[in-house]
Amino acid sequence: MNQKKALYKRIENYFDRLWPIPRSITGPGFIKSLDLLSEIVPFKRIEFHTGDKVLDWVIPKEWVPHRAYLIDPNGKKRADFSKNNLHLVGYSVPFKGILSLTDLKNNINTLPDQPNAIPYITSYYNEAWGFCMSFEEYNNLPEGDYEVVIETELKKGKLTIGEVVLEGTSDKEILISSYLCHPSMANNELSGPLVLSFLCEAITNLSSRKYTYRFIIVPETIGSIAYLSLRGDDLKKKLIAGYQISCIGDNGPFTYKKSREGDTLADRAAIQMMRDLKNENVIPFNPAVGSDERQYCSPGFNLPVGSLMRTMYTKYPEYHTSLDNKKLMDFEGMEEAVETLTSIIHNIEMNVIWENKYPYGEPQLGKRGLFRSLSEKTREDDEMAMWWLLNYADGTNDLFSIADRSGYPITTLARVANKLNEAGIFD
Image (cartoon, rainbow, N blue to C red; front, side):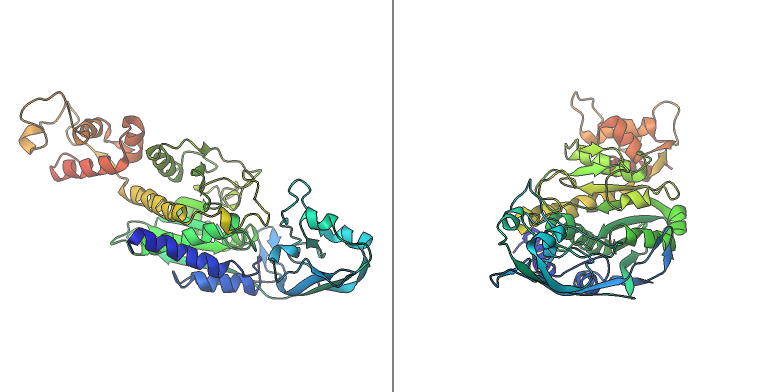
């Protein structure tokens, strides 16, 4: 088995183990999922407790679901939480009783435009209960009385965040973030933390690291807000780039959403990679829709964090439904996502501001073994890149800037710049 096959098979194996776990923003499902991902890299736990104030929010009660279902007038079990976690509205309070179909329908959510799909609905901060089912099943519910069983706990507990910090020679940091709180969803849920975990494994194995890398897995929104309440001030001082990873498991082309500023190092590195991939799916920051990049890029923090996806949330019909399942996943594509993010990080590591010590005219390259003895019409890429470097390496332009101007990949420019440095031309 070659290494490429081994990685995507590992990703699929962890996906299959994570899939049945009933996750939410708190509770044992999140912890169990984080425990599984910690087999890949050892996530340290950061805990916040019910009632803790985090910025403008308060940590909610911990939710522990046990079982939930309906028994119809014919004795048939329906909307069984054990069959699909989406059948129960997230954070439903306990309830047991007998209701008529008319009364019960006030607590059933469906998607009439997608009659075969179960919707994803939550009620985190408003104590209520409810079920979700396909519109097709909803329309076929028999008249009569229904037994309603919801056995859940809402109690004082904790909200947990997973964190791994890989030290570099510099305390300047790169943040990689994803979320782990949606049950029974594949692309919108498991793709992000799986790609993040295997990316962390790859960066752990680098022979050297210039920058410090911070990987975090949070419950979406409340988790990133809690994390910023703890680490936000330090991130404002140290963070040079960051990426929110979301919806990165299908077979669509990559999509990059810029940070709030739009021209940060994170943006420039990602956009350079998108150009190398001949991909133009680069979109501006939009605070009205998104994931945790909205918290990292909120005006008080304004961190240099963009978001890398494949098909963007809300842009695929299976989003936030039971149709977002394994059939939608492309595990080889997820391996490609790990490789692409690794390449972006390699490029950031290579990015340097060089200064040409001989800026008046061209330095004599031949005596340094950097130029052909005979002129030729065809020039190799390295030589062409060298002329760009000699002109624009003036102590103000980094390699990403020169890559933008020249069209040459940063890998080529970095290789040639190192030759010029070894020859004593660059400082």
